[in-house]
Amino acid sequence: MYRIVAKKQLNSAVTLMEVEAPYIASKARAGQFIIFRIDKYGERVPLTIADHDAERGTVTIIFQAVGSSTKALAQLNEGDEILDFVGPLGNATDIEGYKNVCVVGGGVGCAIAYPSAKALHAAGAHVDMIAGFRNKDIVILEEEMRAVSDHLYITTDDGSYGEQGFVTNKLQSLIDAGNQYDLVIAIGPIPMMKFLAEVTRPYGIKTLVSLNPIMIDGTGMCGGCRVTVGGKIRFACVDGPDFDGHEVDFDELMRRNSYYKEQEHARDHECRIIKMGDAAISAESGKKEGQ
Image 1 (cartoon, one colour):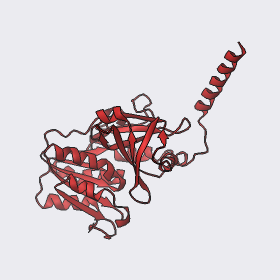
Image 2 (cartoon, one colour; image 1 turned 90 degrees about the vertical axis):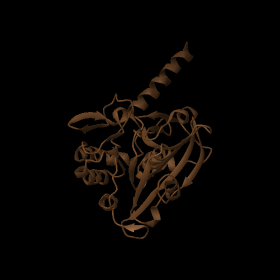
Image 3 (cartoon, rainbow, N blue to C red; image 1 turned 45 degrees about the vertical axis):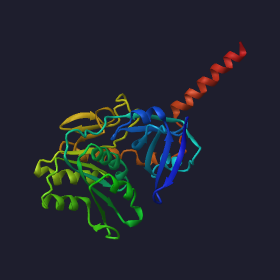
Image 4 (tube, helix red, strand yellow; image 1 turned 60 degrees about the vertical axis):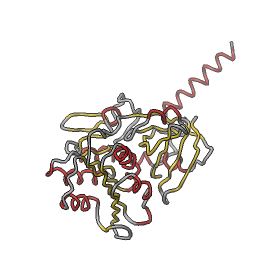
């Protein structure tokens, strides 16, 4: 069991939790993720590691309550425990050798972009960060992002905070102003990442995107998280989650991610396999008692 040691509401839908997980905290690097399961009836849900503290033995996750499992997780409080908390999984973001980087986050994707910006900044790179939100009310991690970037640009769709417009427009304006980035990291909604990759393509700027396809086991065995990159099948859990944005088939990814929307929002379903397993355990216990 993994104890929740801190909880903070970042906006009406986004929650930050710090979870006691010493082994993961000692190994985690920017870009990696965990898979949690609240209880034996819960689904396995991947979340990127937003931060970690090896000394305290804690891992920070930031999530939006949109499906049944994340809504249930958001109901837990400090002192409560999570059944499964597995990681670190996936490959860490490549931060070696880059001098001038732009990290772009969209909405709750800023929670994933933040650790990459933090790692690059600590490695000595010049980091510009663009954080896009629909409006002022849902802005998150502003102070944290500002602390790990040389310049932070916040955009809102409605102009209620920062600059009005989309992150794609801001990135284009920075490139037009003469910024010569050797890496762009884009993390957020799939359409946002797709169009950011198109902004950088004409300039040949290496562009990494962090993908979040349907994922089950996190070890590459189930094949649920397959994505097409450069015309080849890759698995986000073991080959990613970072991929070359210029080679990702984003349209296929969007179609696959929409397959199970109805099931994602249903919690009155009991997994058939778990039910069969519980019945088998009960039957075996009955046999032993009758001996």
